[in-house]
Image 1 (cartoon, protein in one colour):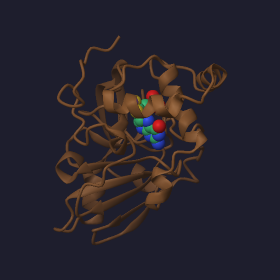
Image 2 (image 1 turned 135 degrees about the vertical axis):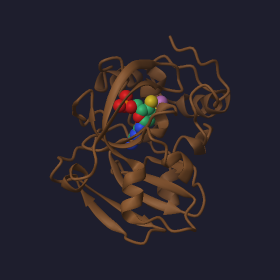
Image 3 (image 1 turned 90 degrees about the vertical axis):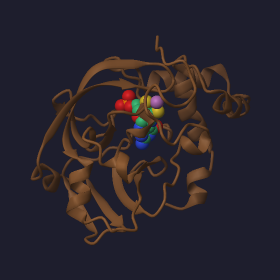
Image 4 (image 1 turned 60 degrees about the horizontal axis):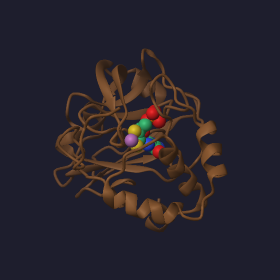
Length: 236
Ligand SMILES: Nc1nc2c(c(=O)[nH]1)N[C@H]1C(S)=C(S)[C@@H](COP(=O)(O)O)O[C@H]1N2
Ligand SMILES: [Mo]
């Protein structure tokens, strides 16, 4: 994906942000400044429309910065693992299923102030995917891409190798729904929800951290819950 595409703020992106605004959010000041400029021309009717499109689900809010929910079946899905690796690969769902399966239970915390307690995630450790590809010495970070065509994320290699960072294939012991980023999403246990990229399509090993979608819009790159984003971490 090229940088120009990444940073373009079209109407659909604005609508996606509106979904966040409509959900009753406490914004970090830098982001709030940008948002109020963006939101100025949008009417209350737009706000209602997007909220109805993605209703809350089991305590979660469903987010998509593109304003749509891209759908792929497990059979259709694949991701690319490339960049600074010895064995670049196209990985299919069956490949993930053949790897060691893990499960963690963690609170899911959005930086904007909502939390869902004790959510079970299953799948493969990102660390195991990295080992299968053979990470080269020059690699210091991973860059994640979504098949929504817009959202990206990043982690340092050390963060990516934490035990509760998953290439997740199940949520609450069921296949991950389209709305929640299925068939395969990232789950980053220790960090705010924006690190948990939905609709995973690419894992690229890079020499440096490349800031992701929300990080280019003012959120911290190191997004550890309670230690980042300079806000009162007390969700309603
Ligand atoms: N592709 C993509 N991934 C994404 C987002 C998004 O808009 N698009 N939003 C992020 C944010 S801010 C949060 S809190 C979680 C929300 O996950 P959910 O939509 O399953 O509730 O997804 C994260 N991953
Ligand atoms: Mo979030």
